[in-house]
Length: 287
Length: 252
Image (cartoon, each protein chain N blue to C red):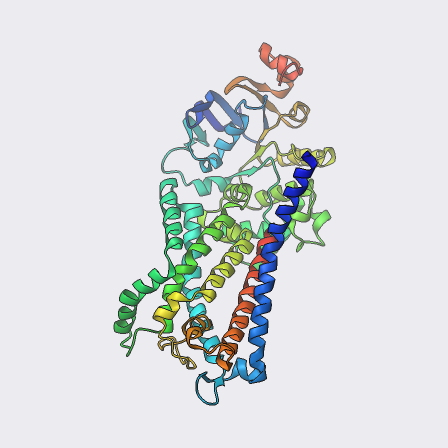
């Protein structure tokens, strides 16, 4: 009887385990089935490197280069802002902050992670967008720059908490060793702690970027959504995610537009997958 | 009578409310090896780790009393702790080379202290490794990661790293407790040679080691200094009954 119970429980857990993989596989298959159909209309090269996205003109022009560049530009901007601040914050929390401030900061970072992206987008729209417009004297504040700044806030919690964890797990005797050799605190951090934690910090950065590139709501609200090749960070851009979210509702099921949006989904899936695999690689290298 | 390197009077140390050193008076003489012996938890590690203030890294640690290094109170406010630690080198219980190459482990220390000429760094790396009796074993693999060395080699690398910045004192906190007998013999031999130029303090739970390497021995028990004298005397005719009980192996 006891054996039978064990058997049932084991199998149940097995099913749970398989289920998650099964669903991922199903989603990916569905994405492929719907998305690959677009290549009956345009070649993969035209699709990826085509410069114009006019899905409802006749004939439709389905080039997603502006969207890819839009996503990359916004992500790159967010990375440039969030990586130094995030890593700096992690160093402060892990190494410098007194216990009380440390706890307040950690709670604050978690709170930042808990803000729904639509709320961040909304706040960005009413505060950041006019600010960017006035500072740079632009016709509109709905730009790639605004998106980058907003997304930096979303990447920060991930970067800070994982990088802080990586720094915290550097063996204490490295630090003692450096101090005993007459290194200052900063020399210890810069030359011993950071290199020792580097793979964990890289993983933190990759996961932060992964969060940014998949983000939809906030970017849709504040990047202006113009599907044109971006010339600078001061113009409106449209990202891959925002395109799907904005247009899926009006695309005819089974139409060319519909297939193209699924193909964008595949592109996003591949990018996120690559980022996660890279992050995973660094995380495992650490152990 | 030699000048003492450390003059310590009524030294107390505690972690939070737990007092681990309860009034230690001891003079540590220059150019000699002083061994600190005693059972686990007697405060010997705390004692040695207070001498270069590395215990400051532990939250709630507090030391008081007169702890004079060459006449200067090392716990007074205007002491430059970073410089103090450069002058008082320390080798730890567990070898702790940085996860860098053998060469960079030493070069790092030099760069921290402002050396930036390549030839000079090369020269000091070689000299330090020679002093630590490691040069012949690693001279062809200086770019190898230090963590791939054996425990004994790692410990000698840590000694080399410490010697590179020419400290005045060497503190060894149970340097051989993680090493095999052959490595231990090498490290002990090294301590013997280093005695010529350095004041050395070594904490050890191995009494044969204390007898082999040291000139003076101090026996600690439950946070107090029970007996201090020439190693020969401590081991052959201890005055205190507790010292005798410990060195003959009746407890500890």
